[in-house]
Image 1 (tube, rainbow, N blue to C red):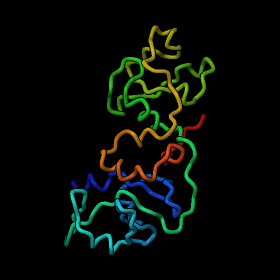
Image 2 (image 1 turned 90 degrees about the vertical axis):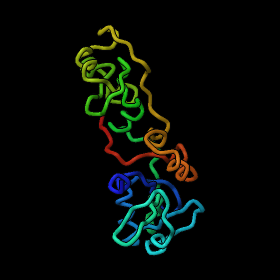
Image 3 (image 1 turned 180 degrees about the vertical axis):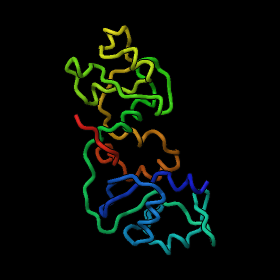
Image 4 (image 1 turned 90 degrees about the horizontal axis):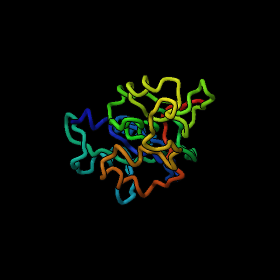
Length: 200
């Protein structure tokens, strides 16, 4: 359980309390221990590593040899004044999240290794790599469609692709309790993510 917990999400704020990043619990503990960040609790109080470690642990905690330490869900960087990104990154992860890991042709929801990204209008026909032309697609449908448009292949899109107004990860894949702890710091304009951006 502790290993899984170490890979769950932690919201990172700059020193102005603006969300700039999402990291893992493992990395958040490193930042706390090094003094680069402070943990923020549900009452917006700040804690360095020793004071955070002294708090009583609850269900979200990591066991050490001597004790259990609460898992921080929000950390505040001490020196970083970087401003949050103003738009959602165009990335493979965000496309999969936007489409719910569901093929936009047949409607099957699959693990990511069973999915591809498909250009609705193929590049061979002048299609571009953009939010509005890329969908999540299963391998079978991708092979069936080939280098054709959905109409040419006799296939139909479940939904027209669009650019999300904010990161799909904020809405999906988080336990309600985590999202509730993040909500005071999130706005649609500021909730962009860190994953690799796709190039046109």
